[in-house]
Image (spheres, rainbow over the protein chains, first blue to last red):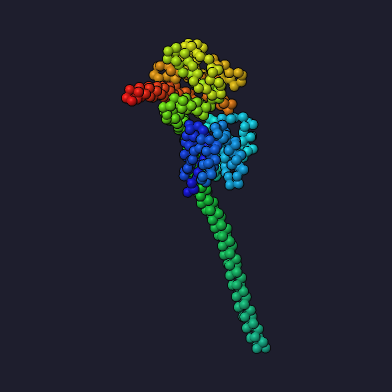
Length: 125
Length: 276
């Protein structure tokens, strides 16, 4: 069975735990955590990931900057990216999607919804 | 002459014989015709009998078939009823599954919140975790944590999100909604969430007392929710209850710990001075 590696880039440990709980329903999943955009990029380069979950408002480097850098790289330009954020505005979503995000989820999150989006992007039935 | 007479006599005799044979043939033919007539009649009779017989056996089979059909229809009805029952049971199970799933998620949220609250003894970290819980689990945009000064019994803002910490005034016991909550220990929620308009720092939409047993040590005040959060759901009220108890103990323990640490380092300093 395939192993799925997911990178969670989120400055809040509470939020990271909530996302990990949601993803635990997927078998053979491995989660790597990062606290900001720079840490996230370092971890992304150090391993092979199937999907990235990223927050927008983070210290050091925000999520939007991180996404734009990921999409500029040929290796990662097709990796699925999910944004989980407090920013619920239409313009925020449009900006993030234009930068190359595949899905946009607003907080507070619903674990089943996050799970469904991840499964869809990873083509897990 | 006699010869010719004799010849004529034999001819007559042969003619007579022939006539006799012909008569017999005619009689035999007549008999055959009669017999044929009888047989035809018999055939017609038999055909009729056969027809009536087949009709009789046909109606029996029909009856059998009708019985079979009604039996099968009855079975079909029973099966349909059973199918409906199973379908309804299935719907109930699906509904129950959704409910359990929701309950499971809510419990997980509460567990994670509680786990995070007690994961540190650093006072600032505890405040930060409370802020994270209120943002990420409840979905608040503007809110603050006010703690009570043990001597003056006044509430003072310690940490905020979306508003300046110094903008929240010091609240005296019994003063306004916040002061009353801190005095009574009973949480306050607005009836309807008003998304529009300016926020009033003395009129929060939610005010949760932070209690250790019956002793209030502070309050959490929520002024505005995130724009995508339209209303409070069941788990929010459970989170408020959890915060009321667990956040209070986490704050209290971390404060005690930092005080004891401070005292310990002071004592250590004295000891070092005396021993050196």
